[in-house]
Amino acid sequence: MPGMETFNPLRDAVPLGEISRVLVIKLRHHGDVLVSSPVFSVLKARAPHLEIDALVYADTAEMLTLHPAISAVHTIDRQWKQLGALGQVKAELALYRTLKGRGYDLIIHLTEHWRGAWLCRLLAPRYALGPVVGGRSKRWQQSFTHLQAAPRNALRHMVEANLDALRRIGLQPAANERRMQLVPGPLAEAAVARHLAGFGLQGGDFIHIHPASRWFFKCWPVDRMAGLIERLHADGHAVVLTAAPSKDEQAMLAAIQARLTQPAHGLSGQLSLKELAALTKVARLFIGVDSAPMHIAAAVGTPTVALFGPSGDKQWGPWGVPFRVVASTQHPCRPCGIDGCGGGKVSDCLGALTVDEVYVAAGELLPNAERKRT
Image (tube, one colour):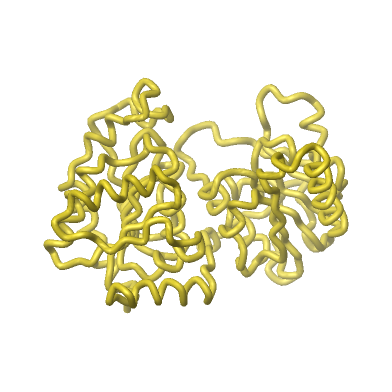
């Protein structure tokens, strides 16, 4: 097959030329799903004949829909639990029948979720890969024909950790194949163009800032974010602020706006995930914290300033674009992975970051942003 490996020292490598359909399972949050997108791209590039499906939670599906390497995105809705026992069973059976009807030859399970192991047993593909999980029973191990070793340190980016699944079955991704990919689509792009026109803006005219995360211990203090926006406004930059529809995130944006002498353009809670991607794609620069929107910015190719506190920037930082990570050098305890110091939801390491530090990082990337426009 074109693009296939001609030699591989791995004795149990999966012969991709002999299979037709693959299911990749990623049951996690939005950012986790998006950083798995290169898995699909690499598989399709190396074996163009493959039909590659994804199985994700319904609320994360837009991270992968329209991806050119994916044939179908199947979903599990977390709300099935609200249907009652009978309703949930019916929904689960419908999904099982759909997946069974696809006749997968290979299943790649990228997390430790037990559902992936059960599906490998029920769907009985010729090959099945899952991660090594400490303390799991033989039932887990026997659900797979191949087991993928997990990284032993926190310095390996999650994009590479996901691609290790392909390495385990005999593929070695080239450097130029490892980009994330998210396709907004024409409907989302048209909706964003209308929003921007309402502000008197068009693509390339603005800096996009998404200050919140679903985990507030990852967020920079409101007064600092307002101070940064004031500096950007003073330099003549238009700023578009976004937030998810949650009340907490919208309250954060309102608090930032209340501190500004000149309000920023706001799209709080008004955008779908695809529309958020379309907006970020045409921004000069993205500024945000460790969150799904930061990964979206990287996936659509926008230079990114990312503020990191308790989470690890080596594992989760922007991937494949010009970027600056702003993180405290005064706190050797980071990254700790704790939800705020002492579990108190406030992270001192983020509070230590100054407006000047983030402003300088943004200024360093704006020349890259200008090259992106041209």
